[in-house]
Length: 480
Image (tube, rainbow, N blue to C red; front, side, top):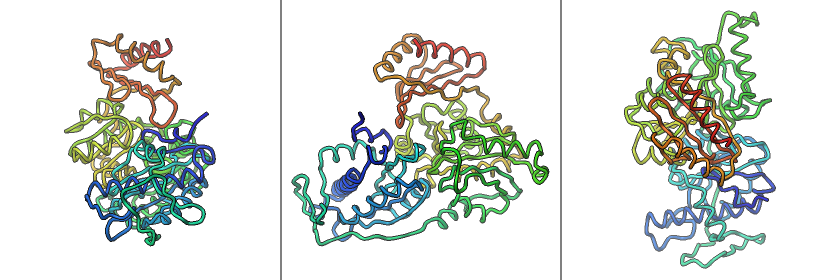
């Protein structure tokens, strides 16, 4: 049976509402989060007179936002109440996407930020993505230690502050927090379009997966009237919000196909130039070409790099050979937004990306910004005069498998790694994230997911023959 410790994943906190995450958990999480920030500020200022949860003359500034799920609304209400009770100045961002939340947090230069979401997990799950100093991500394990050891203060039912452990610092209990409501949607839409120059008319099928990206796109499309959108799942949605699952592509594929074939007389003269699909909390995007064919996210990264020419690129282990070839400076790191953002900050590079559809930009405080990536790709295609299928083929000529998932225990995973190292001992071996083997014209990576109980395999090669050969050899080792 799972314990509440299991909700602390590698990149965020997430669990089933009422089972792993409940009112008590959220209450304790709020106290632990403020305790963590208090310690960060204390280390930064070395101010021995700091009040608990307050720097000398102000409360800690916290931005909170959430996705649209009902369980997230419940967790959000408890979180906001507890943060305010414990002395924080809370800016209520309301329903938002992760990129909008990050834009607001970076703009406000908050002490801390919390996005209440469980990403693409089922509707009865919720969780927290956490950051400090605006948008600098916090590893969940740092909160886990504080929570498990109960190293924080919380109010009890009578409104009296309970001291879980003894501290050398004392909080001024007369100082209470407050709530501030702000809407950043219009400002964020202006931010997204200010660098975009589109002159020709584009017709695009857009699936927002029923998440908050629909609201953002409605504002963006008002400002860019040349983009004519066929809107899918901008509010309610019949499919789940993971854009990498084939079963969720039916509506957007049908839309593009109907225009391509001219089955609908009203749509016969206006075919879609391409399609895009976002996930529920808005931090991932996938693309479909003018024929409705899904495009490997790594190939999109290669096309964007070729068009944007960013100063440096940080990618996870699965982004592929074309990404490295197109980037003027490539830095490889582990999978997960925490590791990508950390490397981008440390190296000061302008762009980052993952094979899963996360695309990061320095311009949005080193965080995900898939709507900007979509707009920028339209601009790149317009300048080149190419269709998306042509631009992708030119940027990325390599062959790839679809990501395959396995159920492998930790013990068996280590055994499989050893077998792989023995089999491919003459090739390049990296254990940055799972195990990656790199040959002359191919590579593969086998790694444990940081958010789900799955082991993921990706393979890429210069030819289809090599791809099939390597895939067969690796699958044979995995299956024993």
